[in-house]
Image 1 (cartoon, rainbow, N blue to C red):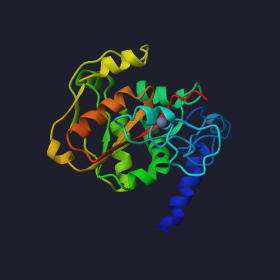
Image 2 (image 1 turned 135 degrees about the vertical axis):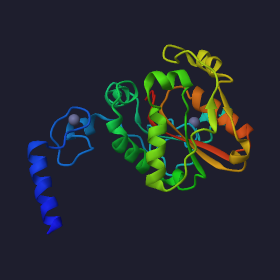
Image 3 (image 1 turned 30 degrees about the vertical axis):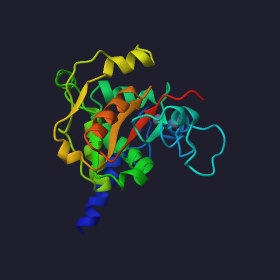
Image 4 (image 1 turned 90 degrees about the horizontal axis):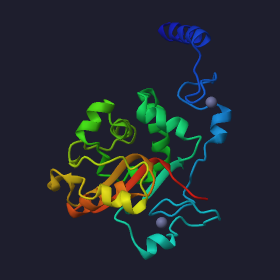
Length: 243
Ligand SMILES: [Zn+2]
Ligand SMILES: [Zn+2]
């Protein structure tokens, strides 16, 4: 009887307040998803990419272990990267409101995307760690978007998260308009590990929203590996790609 009442309530609720696409707000069948048009416009990425830096390949790759030339010549500190979609004008419509406009209602949808994309690495993680914000930025923004994703993901994948072990100790300028070299210099010595004993010998999956040049994630991976982490990989929503 209770179930029937709940179903009637849901039908009435959906009739007057139907679920909407998270980008364009068109009516969709179920909440927390994208409509046909928005789904088509997002460039989802797959394992047809370099397993180390996530650079997508434009040719079919039989095995996902083909490492790109850049990573072979100069192995980054970050040992693996998976991104859900390419960072472009369309995916910005998801990322920017989530990052800067209090759209924390996107967390369930975005963390589910991260979960499906990163299941294979998440299941081996000892800890899921979000890229931290400097405390002044956290106060200004009111939330750390990567931490919200990490907490939700941790529930989905049933692996623990750590929030106050990797710390951002330097106020850095925005990476927005900087080139690769400037980004690397800007982010140097920005992080530290508070309890290295927690990290020693562990496999870490870092969570962030956007991978641009990799400077931030590589700096995080560097301090975690210096603290004794066995392996550091990352899972991000979007990656800047030049196809
Ligand atoms: Zn839409
Ligand atoms: Zn690579």
